[in-house]
Image 1 (cartoon, rainbow, N blue to C red):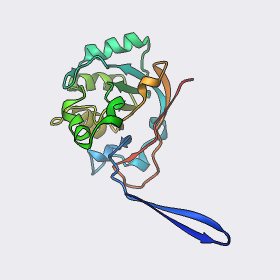
Image 2: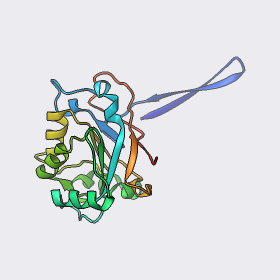
Image 3: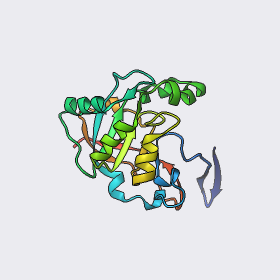
Length: 202
């Protein structure tokens, strides 16, 4: 909810806003606390080098809805990008769902997690973990399928690796390696928060 009020004082006008939001909607960062409320890092505790880092965009738009993104898919996408992800760098999965968001109804958006996007299985998540990535992003509502949630469970809960969900405009990038900047406000204790994620082509 967003509300504005305008006040006049000393010959000028000023606008004040009140914003009430759900912290896991839109483009946002999942903090490890989202799946590990006892000991997982909250938004204000995520190291800045996880949120400002070089990242490789993997083009997986050929994958069909509800299909698993396999290790072979990830390796082929990395080869096609002619890149390799180094320790402490990020990976952004470009599955093509983000481009559809602006034309969807609310019902289509909520169904997207189940019917519109491909998803990571446990083997794909372990492959990413083996690359020692510092952050994972995807242009879909979630990187994994409902149920076992291997990305949330293994990366977020077990290894304190944050996840960016609902990225958009990845198709506008002209190269696969970017500088990712995804800084949320420093909200103490939050399990996630919206960000304006920016990919800088250097």
